[in-house]
Image (cartoon, rainbow, N blue to C red; front, side, top):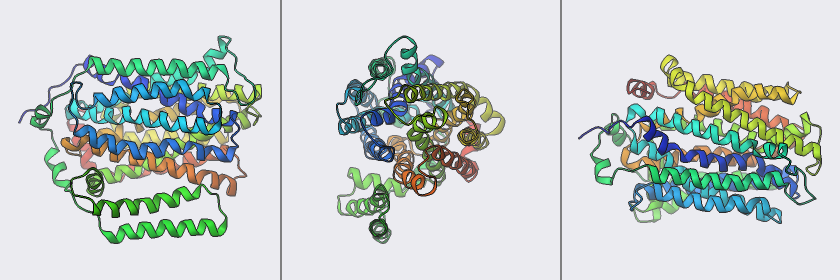
Length: 498
């Protein structure tokens, strides 16, 4: 068997360029969805529930797309058909969302937008694993992080820039300001153009050629991941736990969003039971079997991802309300002061993504000096400090300094776990395992959406600023959990040239 050839800088550039467009869509969604919901009449305690469509969609879409893309081959290749289909649907959703006439339409459009972005995004992670040899994978994921940072800087700042250009930043009750509407239109155009560039300017190895390549760790990964059916006993236990928790929520009259958490526990038990009844080799049995056969390193990284993405989702949901209310002094989404604060959040989000783009350049040097695990630990601790500093900083201008730490954490979260993971899974299952790994991006977001509102209301007087503090504590835990990742994964990646 032969080794994959190394790709040039510009070949890696072209294959990762589509992430610029993907992040345009995500950044506009993250910085403005809460603003749109509140503009259309949502109360603060309703916002997490309206956001729940996004992570739930990812939970359903990503493993399915990963499974299907592993088994796809067309004239466009293996992964690129999904890039193109997701780009088209996401562009249409970006055009529709800021024109939603009612809250439920905006929430439904967010669901479609996130599903479409996930269809395009999930194969991009596997694309790097397919095309690059082990020695270049960390560089490939760092390049993705660079484009994520650059795209998000511009997209997050668009409403603020448009306001500076004279576009109306306020509107009547129930109407989304022109700054947001035009930002979404521009974002849709950029998303489609950037992904189109990657589709046209990159190529994929045919299945028989890909199968002929041998990478370090492939044999170990195959041996570590035998297909196996999950046991009935644990599945019944998960189902019982979900039903019992739902009963407790009902008995105590707790926040109804906690039913989402109960439903997740029960649904997992049902999923495993159903998979045992279906024909072996089908999509659902294969996904469940591969989930239970995850390599040990992937299990440890999953815990790190859980706490990392819990923190990020807390930031995305609550930063607009926290900054507008605490640093600008308004909770009224129709007021000029609130919208000024909301625009400043766009600048802050642009800032952390800009710092992430710079961090993506620095991270390969950090890895060579400190190793993968220590670098990820340092970056997550910087992110924790950034979020916790919101409690102390009162001048909104100084929050830009807080975003330095968040930016380093963001760049690290988007690259280093994937660099550690990609050498631990078999090449033939790169898509499905990347999709399963993204469970641990999506599940913490669902937990955050269901739990944070209850915690804020019960313990913190419904003050959104404290959600950012909870996020900082979660990043701290993620950093500590990084130390539990097997050192063998780090050694292989560094020796290969990460």
